[in-house]
Each structure stands twice: as C-alpha cells, then as structure tokens.
Image (cartoon, rainbow, N blue to C red):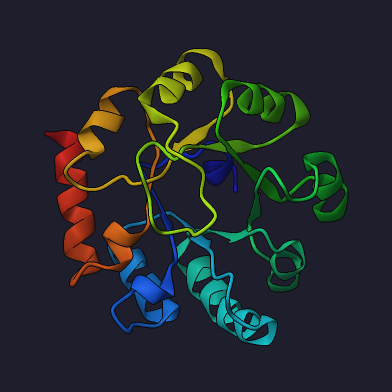
Amino acid sequence: MDKCRNLNTDLYCITAEKFSKGRSNVEVIREMIDGGIKIIQYREKEKKMLYKYQECLKIREMTKKAGVSFIINDDIALALAIGADGVHIGQEDLPIEEVRKIVGEEMIIGLSTHSPKEAREAENRGADYIGVGPIFKTYTKEDVCDPVGLEYLDYVVENINIPFVAIGGIKEHNIKTVSKRGAKTICMVTEIVGSESIKEKIEGVRRAIRE
C-alpha cells in the first residue's frame, strides 16, 4: 500500500474494455500483471453494478496475489465492497474530506486535477496522489476537458510535494517528452489495452522512456 501511495513505479494502467480488441478486463489485467505493471485502475462507467462487482472480485484476487495495487475509479461503494487498495475521484465527485470519512485512513485517495489551483487544493486537503492532465488531447473519456499541456506538468513538478501521475493522450511516441519534464509515473490507457500484445507494448514503452 505504501508503494502505491508513493507511486513508486513508472507506469500506471487503466482499464478501457471498449478499446481492448474484444478482450475482457480480466484478460487484459492478467497481461498487464505479466508485463510487470504494479498499479492498475478499474474504470468502466457504462457497466451494471453487479457485473462490475463480480469482475472486480476476480481482479482483486489476481492483483492481491501478484502484489499489484488495485484502484477503483469514482465508485467508493465498489472500492469498499471488493477491498480495493484505493479509490480515484474527480473534481465533481464527493469532496476528499468526505471520501476519507467513508473509506478510512488506510485506503488511498487519488484526485484528478487540471490546474495549479486544483493541485494545491488537493495537496492541502489530503489527497494521497493526484492525476495531472490531460497532457495531450485524449479521446478515451467522453467528458474530458481540453489538454492542460506540459506547462501544468512543469508547475506540478516544481511546486507540489505529493506524488502525481501524468495522464492524457500519452503514447509510446511522446512518452519520452513527458518523462523528461519530470514525470516519474505516467498513465497510459488505450496505448496499452488496445495493443495486440500488451506485454510487448509495455516493454516498448519502457524502452522509449529509457532511451
């Protein structure tokens, strides 16, 4: 858990079944784990709750066995029900303070931010880590805001003291740009889940960062 709180890893992966070339989230996450991913977020907004619960129970078992931190997007009840390591919330979800009352001190809380003001507030109000983005244009989410660009990333690197993950439109061809600006943990969604071989894609992305 401390490992996830510190975001002590290079890649943070998120599910997106509609981009997964017909594979289930369980299949995709099995490949992510085989590829050495240490933090995985479950984000499926369109599915029925019972289906999500049953799917996440299987994923929780897999991630726990592999020592992988498992985060649930938005759904606090689901995170508690399946014993997730954390919950990731947005600017229009419940306030961090209220989420903390519900989930307790042990569960990780991540918060999406899109501006210096939101980043400072997240740090001051007790977020364990923040999402910083979208760095580039992204089509993964329908309700996403315009890109915040590399300038916001620069601000966070220089001014924010809690861990952060860079997210939004990041691909193998531009990940080096993000890494060079100081992002230690980078989130990828469609680039990973939409690849023919997830394990090979992860290896390629890590090579791109190193080079």
